Image (cartoon, rainbow, N blue to C red):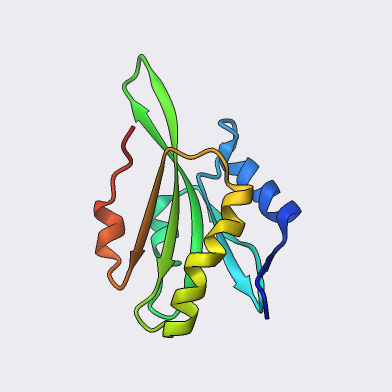
Length: 128
C-alpha cells in the first residue's frame, strides 16, 4: 500500500516549530499504518533523542538557536531516523517517503539521516 501523509496535521506541527514564540523546538512525524502523521513534540532536545529507539523509523523537524547574546538566529534541520531493528523493506520505503515529508517541511537549513546509533545525534551539528 502506498504511503500517504496527513498534510494539514503535519503542517500545523511544523509551523509550531517554526514559530519563534513557541516553546516547541522539535516535532516527529511517525507512521500510523501507511500514513505519516505528527508524533511527539517538545521543548528539550534530549526528549527528542529518547524517541529514536532501535525499533522505529521517523522523521523530525528540529529548531536550533545559534549566535550570541547580540545576534540569535534560528536554524532548522530535517532528521530521518531509522532504528537498527527496522526491516530492510521499511528502510527502503523510508527513503522514498521522505519526499512526502519534504512537501510539508520546506524551510530547513540542513538535512541529516541517522540510524543504528543514537550517539550520532548527540554529535550532530547544524551548519549554515
